[in-house]
Length: 169
Image (cartoon, rainbow, N blue to C red; front, side, top):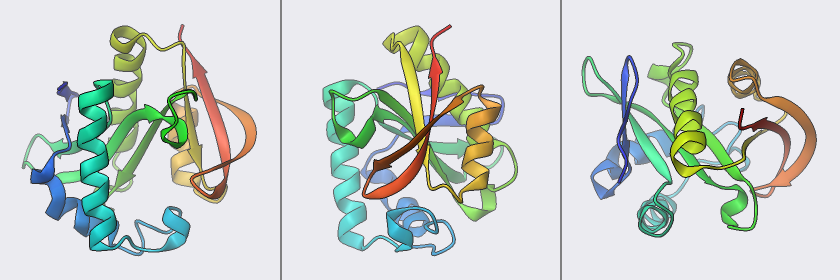
């Protein structure tokens, strides 16, 4: 499984060892404002997510990474490369979820840039997309910072979303 490193973060594949920190992240109502219809995830949801993520690492060779801050070892979030809606027939998607302690510090942009480079240079995908709730200004800012272009509205993960795209250069 692939570990990526940026100036401030180690991106390590999520395993059962990350469950407790994921659980904290996924039950924070503010973190979940634009995810899961605004509802914190249950313990069962997070356990199922870990199982799904580890399965995808085994099958696809990519999925969700834990974002570990290099200076203190804290998991400040998660970021992914996966197939949109979990459907292998759909484009590759990048995404992120940050703990409040990681908000506003550029970690999502830093991790996403590393994942985009990995997607293009190693996985060899022709494009990546990202989706977000239309009111999620912080995620949309990350998408535009990466050079992604708005392509329209879509329905993904049972939510109406904005869709952004970036083609491999």
